[in-house]
Amino acid sequence: MPEEKKNISEDVMVQADGLVKIYKTRTTEVLALQGLDLTVKTGELTALIGNSGSGKSTFLNMIGGLDRPSAGSLWVDGKNLFTMSERELVRYKRDTVGFVWQNNGRNMLPYLTALENIMLPMNLSGARKKRARAMELLERVGLAAKKSSKMNMLSGGEQQRVAIAIALANRPKLLLADEPTGSVDAATADYIFDIFSELNRDGQTILIVTHDMALSKKVRRVIAIRDGKISSERVLKEEFADRVRESGIDWRAEDTQDEYAVLDKANRLQIPHELMEELHLTGNKVRVSREGDRIVISKPDTTSETEGQEENS
Image (cartoon, rainbow, N blue to C red; front, side, top):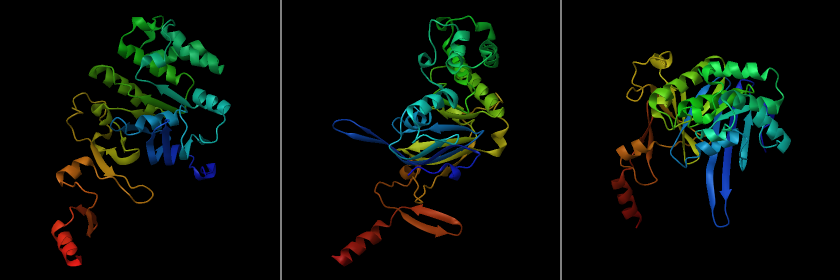
């Protein structure tokens, strides 16, 4: 049963517990999410990373109201996405979340100007002072001079900045971005991230899916998804927390974050692939021991295992 609203803290924007998503065809079933647990607080700027097929985009689509979970519970801004009617879901997608896609064509209509594209969501919601709001957003993304330009007159980076303005048009509680820097150059990616950072400093909650390691190294909290579960979490080190706008830092080369393995509610964790390879762990068994305040994971003693098998034979 989905959790009751009273169990969701007021400072939580996203609460996912035991989230499962199964895609079925006539011949196969694909388990895209396998009991994912994640909490995103209001006002956070969080990045999701993971290999293709890890489940990160599936999760983002669920939060955006574009897909329904198969099991578990999912609350966004105090709203239970399991129990929403279709009418409530339309209102939720219009008013609670804003979506920025990697493919700009999903955000914009090519025959409208930048200003008209930004006004369109407000026309659908019945908002007032639409033109003034659209101009405010164009100024915020640095494109006030391009208000009369249609999409074919804008560069890829400019189109993505318009897409951010469109996603913000109805003042969403949560801004979702799926690979927002995936099709632009490094300089434009930095500019786009600066926009997200400024929005976040003003209180906007933002969740980004990205493969851009330079971008993810600037984010205070990075969640890694593997095989449909949260596998690790990275937190920006204190010495870098106030330096994200400094151009002199090589964000690809610097070790900017501390990484932590994440326990699920059954106290299970995923060991990072890199550590598995370093220890040459190939089977499904490891030795776990305690050394002071540390839990140590090591290779099993294959010699003693073999001797035990011989004694029992």
